[in-house]
Amino acid sequence: MTSTIDGDGATESRVFEADVAKLLQMMVHSVYSDKDVFLRELISNAADACERLRYEAISDPALLADDTKPRITITIDAERRQLTVEDNGIGMSHDEMVDALGTIARSGTKAFIEQAKAAEAGAGVTLIGQFGVGFYSAFMVADHVDVISRRAGDGEAWRWSSDGKGTFTVTPVDESEASPRGTRVVLHLTEEAKEYTDRLKLEQMVKDQSGHVPVPIALAEKPGAAPPESAHGAALGTKPRGEISTHAHAGF
Image (tube, rainbow, N blue to C red):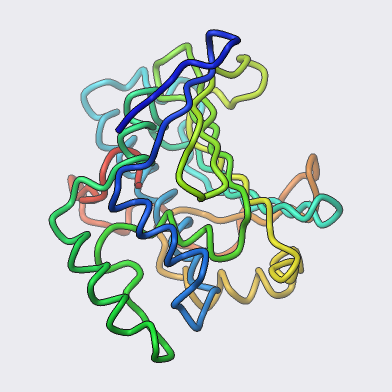
C-alpha cells in the first residue's frame, strides 16, 4: 500500500490494497440483490467492537471510564441524505484504522472474490458475512463513507474517508469532533439509496436482521435528537463470558 502526505502535513492519502480495490468495485456495481444487508454488517461490527472493549476492560477497567454501558446508535439525517452507525466500543488507533479499512489480511478474501464473480450473473448472492469483509458493503448504498474513531484510552482521534474508487485518506480530527471512544460510520447515501433515511424501514431492518445482537440499539430520527433508551438488540452478556469476536481490530 502506498501513501502520500498532503500539503497540510496532516492528511495522508493512501491507495487501497489490490484485493480491497477489487472488492470495492464489486460493491459499487453491486452483485448483491439485497442491499439491506449493509446495515446488518455495520451493526455486527459495532457489536464486535463493544465486545472487544468488554474483554480488554477485564484487565484494564480504566478503558471504560464512566461510560460502562455498551450501545449502538443509528442516526438519520434525511436532509443531508446521511445515515450514521455509532458505537462506544473499543475504537481504532491510526494504525488499526489503516490496517482494518485499507487491507484485507485474510486468506478467505480471494475465495470471496472468486465466488462473487462466479455468482455475478445470478440473484440473491449471500456471500457477505462469510469472509469478514462486511464493512465494504457500505459502498453498495453510499457514494462516500467517513469513519471517525478514537481508541479507548487514546487521546487522538482519526477520520478515514473514501469514495470507494481506489484511494482513501486518514486525517487527525479535533477532540470535539469525536466521542471519548468508539467508532462512528457516516454513510453519504446515493440518490437511489435515500430510502434508508426512512425511520420505519430502518426499524424493521434492525428488527429483522439484528434482534440477536447482544448490545442495545437505538434509533435517532435526526442529528442531535435524543434516541430512545434502547430499541432492538439484546442485553450485553448473552454471549458466554470470555468469548470475543474473531473480526479484526474494532469489528472490521
